[in-house]
Image: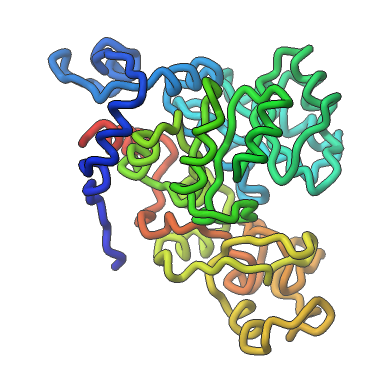
Length: 373
């Protein structure tokens, strides 16, 4: 069984306390808030005060909890996104590879399952074919990663009063995002699972980005699966957090059951930061669980495309469609075959993933962990 480390030594060191003291704090009791009422907290219980940045973020995104679902393409859909939103966090809808007609159906499906806030994400290494239909069909928040939107795209969003979020990994990328008018920044670290744009650990990158973000909220992303870890980064100055692998391992996720169980059983040391699973997205760095595909590739000396062992092997099927080894495809519930050999995307947060709860159970647990010192 994986060890569970809920130590808070980092929270009580002088550096953390200095960070808290330096942050502008809004004093309020959890019992006086809608969250406190929902959680059944006694009126005499005093909550760990939320920063102005966190309050600004939750108001901006129209959410109760400063928690954002990562747009893990292939293993989330309208059901999982709506479940996150309906339970007070921000649900995600990945539209990076969607054609306009399909995107419209997905957007309408989410809106049919929740009246609360959600966002659409676009990976800008690929043409955002569904960008205009996302604007036209009432998506309240649009987020970008792996690139910057054009000035024209940002202007279209501003004209429609759509909230603009941009993933950043350095001072330079943060400045570019701020110049475009980003309403919030998603600061990613190398601990993240999936396709990782970052080149530094989250704690280092977050400190760098916060220095120039000003009053624009910054959200921490990478290796976060508990309220304890959430508190750590928010005490550094983050307004909220992103969770990816943790939401994949939930009942509502459409990840394959074998994939979910692999996340539960894995440790951080079982993940690898690599370019191995790149068929469909050349040379993009990503973090996945070590598996048979990676092991045979590594043992052959990490050969380039066209020279990799078993490169044309069909490892899984979706109906009549074959998916070959080294594909970027995520292991969704609809695949049949050797799920282990696929890209089982996973962040270092797997150390803290020990079960497969419902989204409601998970969010309630995270918030209780966050409020308990």
